[in-house]
Length: 158
Image 1: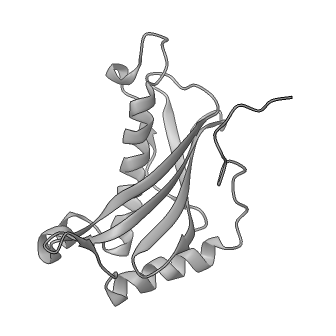
Image 2 (image 1 turned 90 degrees about the vertical axis):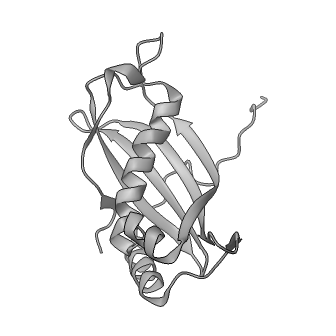
Image 3 (image 1 turned 120 degrees about the vertical axis):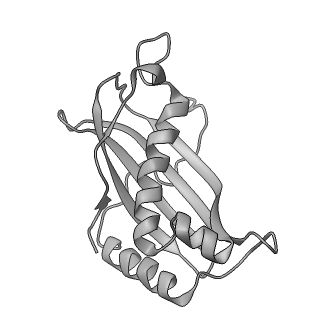
């Protein structure tokens, strides 16, 4: 398993920028989601899985840290790292880098849960998928966690 898992390069579209001239915060989520979907598809959790099983995965919690602005036309590379997983959940972090200049733009920490859409409840991952998730988790354990993981939001008083 690759460490980190990196999907295809993604491009910031013109209509995604705001009046400040940089990527609007909502579209960081779009880029991160595209990369996460690509990674989860390698586990077998793509659109076909949802159609065949009526199961999917839902986001439970996210935490975003913005480090450096990016602009329309910029290409980004998103590095995905599995931090932890159990029978029903995956905790991972994504780091967005400017593809050419290699600076860190944004970090997103995410917790997702596997959901049975018929029962409307969380459900264990199928064994084959759990095996793939566990294999990636194991290969990512040697990686250093970004300093933003577990970060608490708040105003630091001096």
